[in-house]
Length: 425
Image 1 (cartoon, one colour):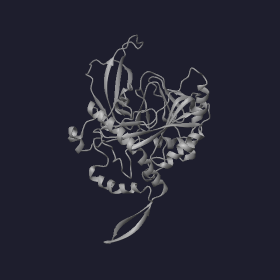
Image 2 (cartoon, rainbow, N blue to C red; image 1 turned 90 degrees about the vertical axis):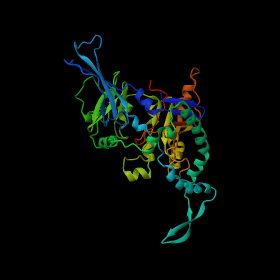
Image 3 (cartoon, helix red, strand yellow; image 1 turned 120 degrees about the vertical axis):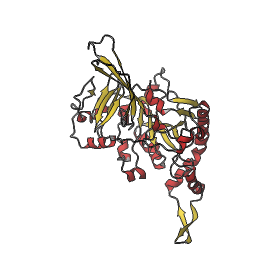
Image 4 (cartoon, rainbow, N blue to C red; image 1 turned 90 degrees about the horizontal axis):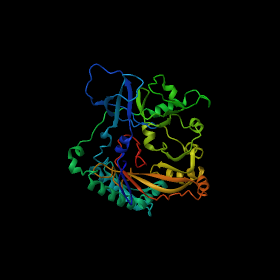
């Protein structure tokens, strides 16, 4: 289960358990060998494990053999490889900013006390001399401070309750109980995720018309699928077992009964051609920010490009639309005041993901002026379709509570969000 504890403020989640609950089992037929060896544990240094966005993680598998009933293959045996996510990727025992760095946060906290006083005087030292200068905060900084002031108590009190419950149950462990792990950070030899490069590659592929963009169903033991076959089309695994695909030399596990579209945002035709609608749509846009610009890790989308995502055509009646948003007030206002209205989506709630260590500390000090230990989710309902659906007296739409907390230990991989479902079943 993903939910470890549920209290009135929200939920404490176990992200790792949610991933491993999914049946990542590869089933392969092979002829039995003369000598049978014992099952062994094999460690893969870099194996990506996601159907839509790569986990970029390594896994372990334990092979075993069994002979299925009514098998037309005669003496063929079933070789099963079961994959699990590396637990080290969620072993965050120390905050990203330690107590040694906390002095800077406390000194700059006075900045937040100036919401009603735009200017302050500070002293800076240049060549051994001190001079006084006046610093003004821009409107974005003032908005951010005011937003933090409003939700600070909610984040602190609600998280404390859920963290205490986790410590009491033993799901979380105090740092004194894990002293060795807390003192030495773990370095993992991980390969980087290449999905952004794959999507960039998709931009330069020849345009395919609608007849060529047919759904590709992965068949058993099908080795004829090439990398180019997987671009800009729906790829489905309709079987009850995991399938493995290779892209740019890296292996990806596709869970049973799942599908994906690997393409640039401008090529959404294959998804629309399926004529399917969805009850829940979760969006995690690549928001523009200074960190992304500096690292050049991936391309970001402009507000206009995000608006062009065809959510109205993909949404079922009363569809719930969930958008992950950074703490930048410009982005929050855009989603609430521009993006959702353009999709005929009504804002119904705002939730907060609070990131903690395995010992129950915030990964960043709560009042850090640079990075906060929380991110936001904006939840909305498709307004027009919901109104039509509610005309049917048999349909009752459950209310969505506002300002709920999702508290979890984050993955060390970049921008890996926690599950929003209680269980993958």
